[in-house]
Amino acid sequence: MVLSGVLIDKIISKDYADRLVLIYKGKHLELCALGKEELILMKCFAGREKDIPHVRALIKKNPDLKIVDKRLEELMNKRIPQASKAADFFDDICSQLGVAP
Amino acid sequence: MKILPRHFPLSTKAASRLYWELKKRGAFCEGNYHAWPFKNFCDEELFSMALLQARYDPRLMAILVHYFRHIPVTLHPLIFKESLRKHEGLSTAAVLGEYVLDSKAPETNKELFGYLATGIKPEPLQLFYKGLYPISGSKMEEAITQPLWAFKKWGFLAADPPLLKEEEKTKRTYLYDKITRLELLKKMLQEKKETRLQNYLHLVGHGISRQQALKDLEKVPWIKKTGKNKGTIYRWKAPS
Image (cartoon, rainbow over the protein chains, first blue to last red):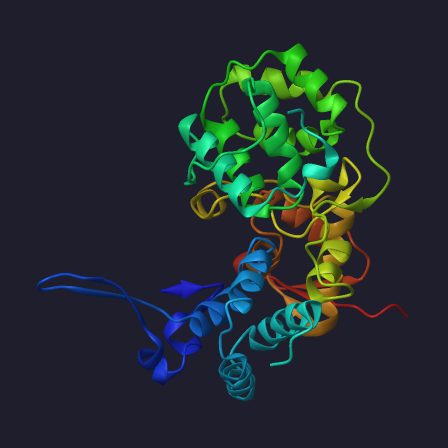
């Protein structure tokens, strides 16, 4: 899947499975959704106006912001396109909310 | 209860109810029923309220654009315009109207938005979305340096077109006026030193035709053209 020209599997870290959230459990099927940290990462990469309220709402739900910050730094070091833009987006919203990653 | 400025932005529950009401009328959204203080609403007032709330919620703006582009409405033009005038929402409707008029929307909707925009003056320059951007953040910079044409025309600054994902990909929407396009081009060339036609089209969100893009590239003095046809490269020519 492509998000703003960057493959999602390049954005989220390998340990994403540790943070999956179970949203449905049937007899033979379990459905999981990505954790808050991964959602924030993806929204920061999308970086649209409509993502600002979503990231704000997710941050208010107490995710581990250090995970997001660390991952963004890793992606910037790997020179993944738009990583620095995503990091700016994330830092702006954190400072707006007065929270430190 | 009447709509008052102090009601905005709506609370989460009231916003959810607004989405629910819009869904009932065929909009592409989901919401939940919650009690709210607004009773005996006519549709014209409901859409006025949605437009006022859209100044705080970019997704709602996109939902409204999508709605008026696809669903023929039977809103009473006089009542709707009066309701919007009362709540100072006419310029917001005019912005939305630009995206409706620039589409294959039902004729009744186009006529409605043509009528709403008649006699309206642009607002003093301001950000379209209230309280959205972090102060002096990257998104605010984007809204100021790359304002979208439809917003700018009515005195507003915004960075992203209010379109749902599938529309962004499949339809050409005119996004930037010439001044903004050339500013974007200049910035790109100063950074990358050279470009091709396709890169320029991508930069402006494919909002203009190939011919218009060629005209833009060939008429500015700070570009040097080399090569022919598909191999043409446009290079930054620093002013001497």
